[in-house]
Image 1 (cartoon, rainbow, N blue to C red):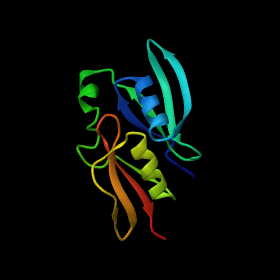
Image 2 (image 1 turned 90 degrees about the vertical axis):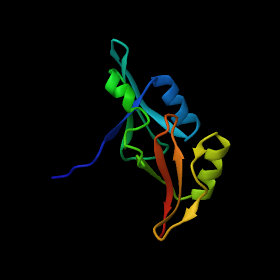
Image 3 (image 1 turned 180 degrees about the vertical axis):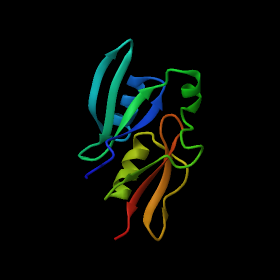
Length: 130
């Protein structure tokens, strides 16, 4: 049996604002934007050139979902964005207005820095060692 993760859901408050942030600030590409009726859409973004899992941008529809926007991991790092050019991506993201919570640091496993998405969810930008 073969399995893989296809999408991870990220709650958003507005489809177009989220698409713009991920494509303009992180350089992701829009994989799919399909209307589902009643204002709902199937929206998937992913890092440019990535073959793996994408982010399903899901517009919050209930009060509980809206309350979870920006807190989907309870304050922990939600997602990990791997790169093979940490410093190039870091500088490009800074220039695009991405907010980093810390200065980059060297860890035994990677060069890493925590940044926030447009809703305040923490992410790791990291270049693994070796």
